[in-house]
Structures are given as C-alpha cells and as structure tokens.
Image 1 (cartoon, rainbow, N blue to C red):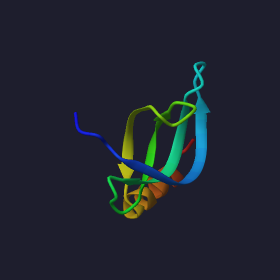
Image 2 (cartoon, rainbow, N blue to C red; image 1 turned 135 degrees about the horizontal axis):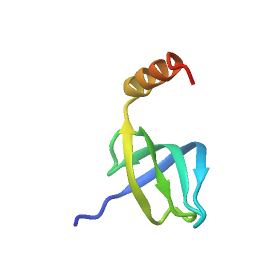
Image 3 (cartoon, rainbow, N blue to C red; image 1 turned 180 degrees about the vertical axis):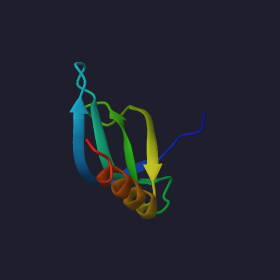
Image 4 (cartoon, rainbow, N blue to C red; image 1 turned 90 degrees about the horizontal axis):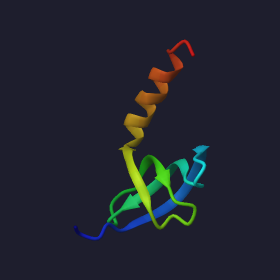
Length: 73
C-alpha cells in the first residue's frame, strides 16, 4: 500500500473518545499535498494511526450542516 501523507492544518473538534483513547475528530486536513478538506474519522491519541473516515469539501460540509439543521434531534 502506498504511503499516505497528511497534514492536519486545523483541529475543529472532538466528537467522542473510545475507552482505548482514540478520538473521533473533525479536522481540516491536506492529503498528499492537495487542497485541505474537512475530515471526520477516529485517530489514535498521537495521530500516528487512523481509522476509516469521511472527507468532505466545504460545499459538502455545508450541505451536511443544512441536512442536520433540518433534522428533529
């Protein structure tokens, strides 16, 4: 598997933490030197390991925000 390079440019926030210390975080990340995107995934405490996640453009994040705002939570 090819090396994936990432640069966490901004930590937006943490949604939860697992008993093993992994955090589900929303971050702004540049993947392989490309334009940064919003990213939601689980991270090891030292950010050296990550779980599967979802990467969203600004437009997609705005659409998600609008969808969540219309939900009756």
